[in-house]
Image (cartoon, rainbow over all chains, first blue to last red; front, side, top):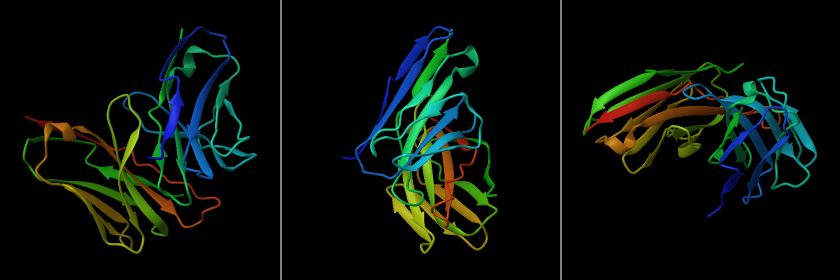
Length: 111
Length: 114
């Protein structure tokens, strides 16, 4: 079964550390997305990509960066983590229009 | 810009009841609409995907309908169970595949009491 994988599932890290959240999909989808979601709150799109070497910022401003060197891989990086970055980060992919598949998410806590 | 509204924001029902969740959207030029389920602290699980040419889709106890012209979709859950307790989100996708991305509603949080 095709799937999308996020690692780590949980991460607790100190302020100022650099972190990379991993997202990989096995479906060959061109489109990939990163969402940020606080507990009980709505999804906010922070980054998206329509293919290799294509990345765009989403609706919510974020200090994170992304890269898309391979179709299946869409990592998100925070150069210097802060407590305000504490949140859940969800990765998704889609083939054409809609039809999203989501990963299980990474719950990040910055202390 | 597409705006998605889900009503009610929260719903509590006794086990066994049939229920309807509502989703309305302002831009009817959609390619498809997807319904998701989200459990607390987890990712989103796709339930149903309705293409713009379809009127409804069914999966088990779930039935989703789409009325594109009126900008509405409903998710019908038959014979609800405590395991159905979760937040349900709808997400229409626009026709413009290059610029368009799905817009997510804020969700309806469903609690099914045993």
